[in-house]
Image (cartoon, rainbow, N blue to C red; front, side, top):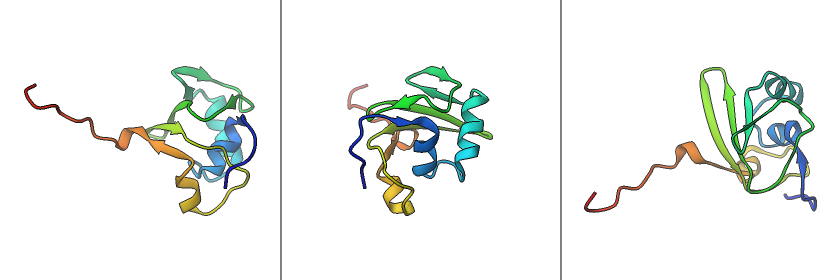
Length: 99
C-alpha cells in the first residue's frame, strides 16, 4: 500500500520496510551514522526521503544497498514491505560477450 505523500521520514521508512525491527532502532542506526542517502551520510532520523533515493545501511557486519521504490502508509506484512525497495546488492552484474 502506498501513501499519497512525496516524502517520508527515513526512520519511519526503514521500519515500515522491515529493514529494522523497531523505529527506535532505525533512529539509532541513523544517529550513529550507519545510514547514507545517495552516498551522503545522514545523522537525523527526520531526514526526508523519496522514491528513487539509494540507501546504504550498515547493520552489524552486513551492508545493504537499497533503492527506494515506494513510500508506505503503514507497517504491513513482509510481502508488502519487500515491494517498497529494490535490493541493489542482490543484483548480479551482467557480463557482456567479448569482454
